[in-house]
Amino acid sequence: MSLLKKTKSMKTFLYTSDIPSNRSEVLDSLKGLAILNLTRYSWQPPDRAVLEYGIEAKEVFSLTAGCLIMSFDSGLVIGYGSQPSKNSVTIWVEKNEAAEISEELAEEDNELYPVDATDAVYSNNFWARFVGQRISNITILKRSYSSALYADIANEIGLLFEVEDGSKFIASHGLHDDSDDFSVIQESQIDNEIRNQIQGL
Image (tube, rainbow, N blue to C red; front, top):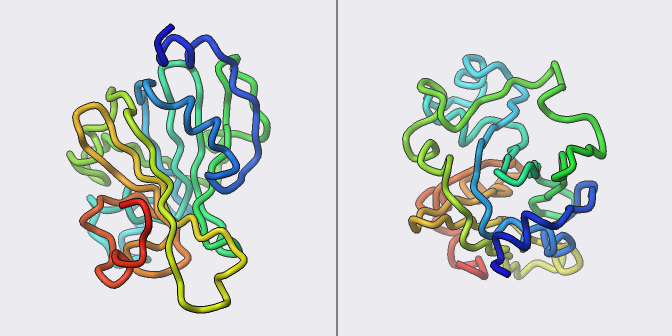
């Protein structure tokens, strides 16, 4: 049986937010699935995010504050964010293939503002290209620190997604500006000083 058929026939368990290494079985199940939607759920209305974060309109999908929700052709819906106390990105199951949900869906939160990857104003063509593509590989990125302050926390600062045409993006914990902010970025947006500290690239 192919990986695609296996993942489509399995029912993913509902999980709360955790670091990627603790959800490796969920990440493995995504390989071979086609992305139906990529949506950021911004804490700010998109036009206000432009002013609040000092970014261009087309950068809102990438750099606004708020989680990323990824929907797949199997019915699976996965959420991504970050947890500063663990210096890591996080992952959770919003909805499994049987349409069961563990908590309130981001799409039902009236205090969040959805920004789709295909939005003509608040996104750009780089992000639109991932819709409809199948995931071929996912890599957990870890950051090495010399400071003992980081010795006992996860430091899983990114999830690198690669799709079937070779395009890649990163669900990131501060990789573009060395902050505690969650972002969705291209590899080229990684801060140059941080790049040499990353394992997995």
